[in-house]
Image (cartoon, rainbow, N blue to C red; front, side, top):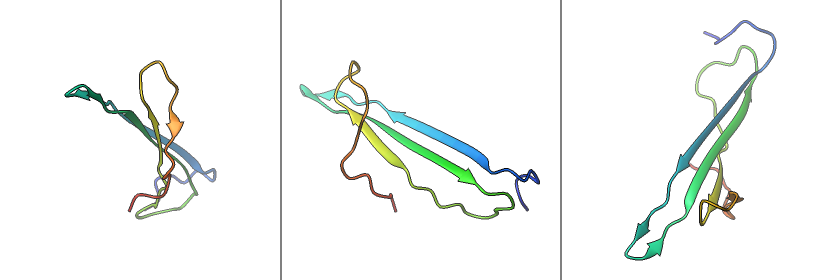
Length: 73
């Protein structure tokens, strides 16, 4: 059944950050996976999403889009 009977779309924003690490002196970047969707009223079942992936090399930097910003299957 629908999540809501409200006639307006539901906005959903999910952000997951993955902290990098330093292993054997090699720094691995931090990643941010962002999913932003508007779910139309009455929508049921599985809702496909298109995550955007960003990275940064150190904490002082802003996140930048990862070049391969394709859908994850």
